[in-house]
Image 1 (cartoon, rainbow, N blue to C red):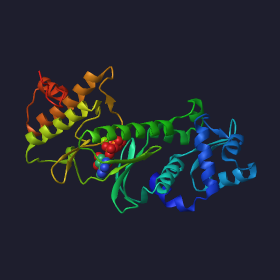
Image 2: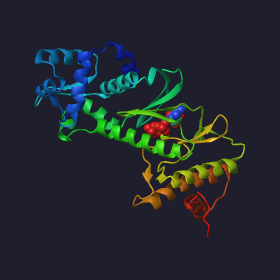
Image 3: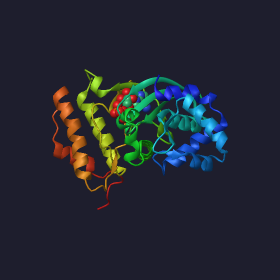
Image 4: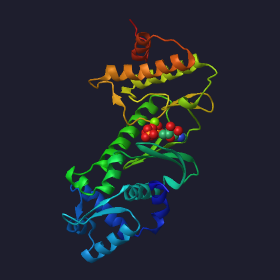
Length: 301
Ligand SMILES: Nc1ncnc2c1ncn2[C@@H]1O[C@H](COP(=O)(O)OP(=O)(O)OP(=O)(O)O)[C@@H](O)[C@H]1O
Ligand SMILES: [Mg+2]
């Protein structure tokens, strides 16, 4: 079972005092690579005996790591962090239940889920630093030496960045899943039925589909953003044949110092792919000019 699935299945078993200790761990992790007991007492407002008891329970549920030396300290693991996020989503009446996995990647796990209104949504758990975090299980000292392993911080930043970018471009009528909610390292968005372009062997109208992609890149640019990770993996062909752009945590604003090369790299990826796979030829220069041409009301001059 994946971390998020385990978190979802444990959620109802976690007692309020255990949540207080999970919250205390989260707070402490901003400051400590392993959070000492007395800090947990301070942050949780529980007494030492209670904190120790709750830590044992959380350890039994495998929601934390315990560092015995050089000083006794604790951190959340991914499942512990998932529990905090899922609990917040449930409390905010966003999520009702977590469903099937839609994809397990290097830096994110994505699941189907059902909202309180019975809508189907996609829930993306950002997992930055997952590789080094796994290593730490074997070599415990490693985490402490690196300062706070900021896996949870990095993952939260990625989720915030993705959600904000999606909000901004969604507003600008770029075809993206509807951004619904974000908490910690988790983004909730509209569920989209379709195929990743990389898995699509035949397009009815490759030229038209490419035009569609470029129009969406143009609107993105017009909204002040560049996707920065555009490839056939992050372009979806929806069941109705329309384009959808996904996976936004790496996006940057158009006033980024490397904006030009970031945009060109996205465009090259897309144009190369269409040239190789569908034999569609486009000039990079003209495409870049099209994307950068401001839309909006025509000038009166
Ligand atoms: N809103 C959605 N609705 C349905 N499926 C989705 C949605 N968002 C993502 N997916 C599926 O999950 C996959 C991974 O999503 P995404 O590209 O956002 O994450 P990722 O960061 O690429 O993960 P990885 O670490 O593999 O790179 C997508 O290729 C797609 O198949
Ligand atoms: Mg992706």
